[in-house]
Image 1 (cartoon, helix red, strand yellow):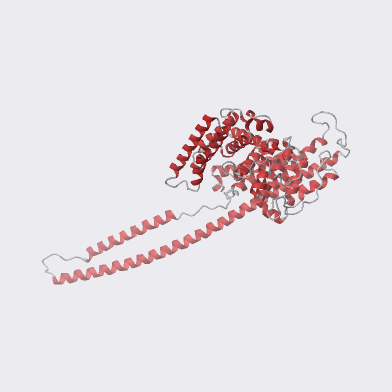
Image 2 (cartoon, rainbow, N blue to C red):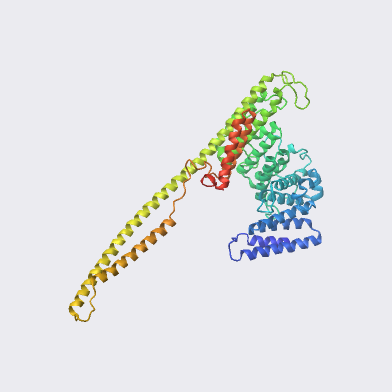
Length: 566
């Protein structure tokens, strides 16, 4: 009851802006209610309520701006599950049972879900500004979350037995129910928010895969795929997750499963469609024979799959649904598959098996000439290089177009301000002429009045006012007017400083790239360097890596005229 009251209080004030006068006291009151809930739940031994309250209070503190406090609550939630002190900083993922079945028996379904949510939040939002977590701590948090996200899949009789089974086979809509009579689709936003968990699971899987642990990333990506397909029905999110799955499978050496995923994404197969039901598709998948890993990549039976991954084009309607970010992720997955395939056949061109050290027959041990693999390897690497260079060129062109449009806007604004300044100067000159004319008229009138008074006054009174005295007064008035005009002009110049150019030789070409575009460019450069190294072109690989590092350094350090927009 207490946690429901706290959640309801947070829901009632969820739309209040943080800057409102009563926002801080309200959030403090909500945090205090959660603290009372946690204390009461610990007294009665209700671990599920303790973890849920800690997780929600961390979200409240994050909304309040207390990121260190939020990270502390999320870490305490994970500690409550594992029984360790500062889990991500000490034991890490080793504190969890070795398999999902053991996690389920020990923690229960919702305990695992709360722990996964807390670990994913630490992995995504943690850092020096939140919990003082370094990259190693955040990786351990991501590994904990990925391991716990495999638990919902063990409820079925035929649940995955290996990590690779979470994403093996042709891409299709995943099962609509992972756990019998348990809602994991987000109807209760405080107990389980499907949209947030889909994002966190995707980010967690991507981080774990990038750390060189692709098999550990597959359960988290499978969970994100389930939510994107059934709870959110988001085509772009689903395609993004499947692209990450294809890349992870390729890194793990599962080329057949990875090729099937890529072929399905190219054709737009197995996408959720409201019009045709949960298993609707946009277009029919092409007939692609399964990739046979027991045969050389250059074998005739594998040629259709290689051609599909290397050169098939995504349909216009499908590409429009994916968007540029997902399209870039798919291109990266295709290049990763080609590089993995080329690496897999490299040993067949050698003289000995790298594991057994036994001599390899001239035919590669599979009945076909070893020269086929050598030629296939070169073709695969060339295709990967072409895909990555095309991705870099396309993204760079988009960034350049954005910079050109922004530069045109700056020029137009600059011309507009120049015209306004000219108009103000003309108006000021006209006002100065009017003021001078008025001063001259006033001076003439004063002189005439003085002369008239002199004629009528007694000559011995000594009250005659000379024109020179009046002129001094007029000159003083003119000097005061000039001083005021100069002061106004200086103020206007200070307010109207021109915006800095974004296009030029000294400007970084990534200066106006969005965060997603910078990510695409940097990732493609790194992959391209790997492909060039595989082609035995170390100088070109070094140049690509250095150019990417310099651009990132310029953006991060303020060089090149500015930074990217996020």
